[in-house]
Structures are given as structure tokens and as C-alpha cells.
Length: 347
Ligand SMILES: *Cc1c(COP(=O)(O)O)cnc(C)c1O
Image (cartoon, rainbow, N blue to C red):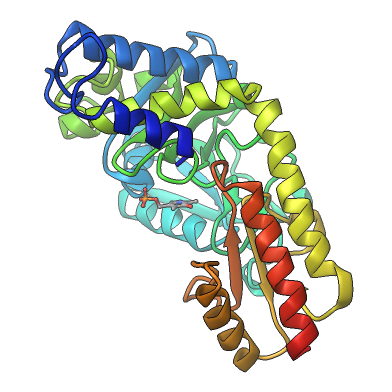
């Protein structure tokens, strides 16, 4: 979370200016909350450049519930959905979809430990696929799609949980984009779903009501009580992004931050980046040291120096610096300095 956002939320926690109650105390049907929701949606539209051909939904259940809701709403009987397998989250999404219908997994880079995004020639799409699913940034493996795959007429569906609004994207090329808010958009508890209006017609009326995109859209995400505090914080985070110059502004910052880290990783050969260079993520920088023993020591000493959370995901090991939008550049500088000193004394 950006510090400015947390400080504003702190100032307004007990009573919203001019309202006299906390955002957690007012009705989600009040004019005050309706305005908070409307402003957050308008800012999401402004940042993404998506007009009213798309619906902006603020749901619950995290990206993980979208793994189920996407096929429940879009797959349909007798059709096939294509899933491009670029990492453990992509794999989880495909596995959930298989519970719902027919899934074709393609373009898998699993044999390379998911260290890259597949080449277009490795992806074979099903003719007339219900949709094609990608994971725009592979959080655990540290890879990111830079050029979106060509998918013909099939709607492109994306889990963008770990890189949404980190840079401009061709948002209009997606049929549906979803993201748990907690990495780049706000706190956990809100899930942003951007869906092209025509796809709402696919939602079967037989679905559980809460899992039906069409119902959620018709009720402007207010079918039941939405995560009001989370939506308020997401709205403040959108205002913060706009103050930095929107997505081009944050992209320049993110590119500079990532370049500093990758530059250090590539400098001497002591550190080794795990993602192939053409697939490197701006958000999750994964690297290894010469031995697992050194990785343990690195991790322990980094933590002691205030550089916490560098241990890679338990499924891949090594190190991972997750440097989402709100992570300050001074933190990168401190890490680079620590890496240099560690190499000097242990290398
Ligand atoms: C973190 C993450 C998830 C899981 O999100 P939840 O909101 O916890 O369900 C899914 N996909 C990707 C790419 C992620 O980074």
C-alpha cells in the first residue's frame, strides 16, 4: 500500500470528512458509499482507458474464486477453453476450470521450470475456443507477458493479479481481466473484474447468484454488501496512481526499479536470474545464489538488515523480490547495496 494512502485512511478512519461516520459504519446503499464506488470505477476506467463497452466489477473471493467463476460463466457445455500454462497460478486456474468443463492446456513452459513465456509457435489454439486464458505476470516464477498472444476471435481472459496497473497494457484486447486487489490495487478482500459487456450474455441463469457476472453487473457490484473498506482503499490507490501520471508514470518508476535490481543480478555472475531475459517480470525479480547454504545466509542477514520477505516461494526456492507499485525505490537501493556487500564478504 502506498504510504500516502495509508496516512489518508488513518486520518479518515474514525469519520469520513463531512460525514461523521467511518466508511465501515455507513450503509453500502448510502449516497456517500455510492459516490466512493462510482469514483473508484471511474478512475479504473480512466487508468485502463476502457469505456462503457466494459463493466467494472468489484467482487470478493480473490483471484482464486475467479479461477472458478470464469469457466462457470464463459465456458458453456460442448465448448473448450484454452489455458496457456506459464506458472503455478496458471496451472491452478486450469485445474479449477477442468472441474467445470473441457480445458485444453497449451504452450506450457513447465519443462523449463516456467522460466519463460512461450513463443507463439508453441501455442496451439482450439478453433472456436470459448476463450483463451493467460496469466499476465507469473508471480512465483518472475516472468511476464510483454506482447499479448494473438487469439483470433476468442476472448482473451487474463489473471492480472500481480501486474495490473503496473504499466500501460492493451486492455481493449481482453474480453475479461481479473485481479485480486492486494498486490497492486489496494488491500485483500476486493477482486477487480473488467468484463466486456457482450460476454455477460453467456452467464447461465442456473448459476449460484453470487457467482453470476450478469447479476453482479446488473447490480453494479451491490447485489449484497460489497467489501466497502477495501473499495474505499482501492479508490484512494487509484487517486495515488493518477497523481504519479497514471500508468505511463508508474511504468517509468517500475522500469527504473526493476532495471536497478536486474542490473545488479547481471553485474558479476554471483547472482543468477532465474527467468529468461526476454520474459523477465517488472514486479517479481527472482534470483539464486551459488549455493542453497548461501541463500539461507543471505535471507537471514537480509531480514536482520530490515530487508524482509526475500525468500522465494516454497515451490521454487531461491530469492524473490516482489516490487509492486507501492514498493519504494529506496527499498531497491537498500537491497542493491546489501547484495553488493554480501557478495564482497561471501562471494
Ligand atoms: C496472488 C495471486 C493469486 C491469488 O490471489 P488470491 O486473491 O489470493 O486468490 C492468483 N493469481 C496470481 C497471478 C497471483 O499473483
